[in-house]
Length: 125
Image (tube, one colour):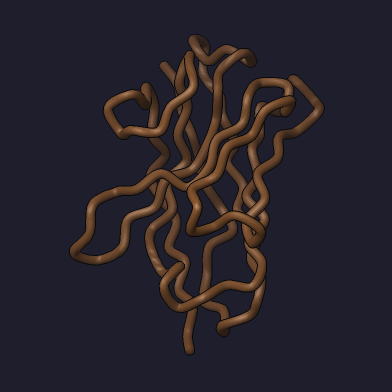
């Protein structure tokens, strides 16, 4: 099985920054997996935020976060950790952020193989 554990959420003022982490573990988790992030605001569907390949060579972002959020991945293969650096945060970024992993690139929730439990990010105006 695979476990994805997020951390780093919290409350921040508009214009502030947060850094989310996602630690992956489990016997069936492969370091080749694509990792990424989705988010879900109250009353809305879960939406794609960003993804990164196993070696960090390719990243992809939703238009709404380009230039403000940066995804990265630990260079230590033993850690299997992905990060989301969130700068210039806006109130509309408020949501539960979910870590995701799969054996191929994803944008839709149906293409994600594994989910974390989520971490709350709240941006006050």
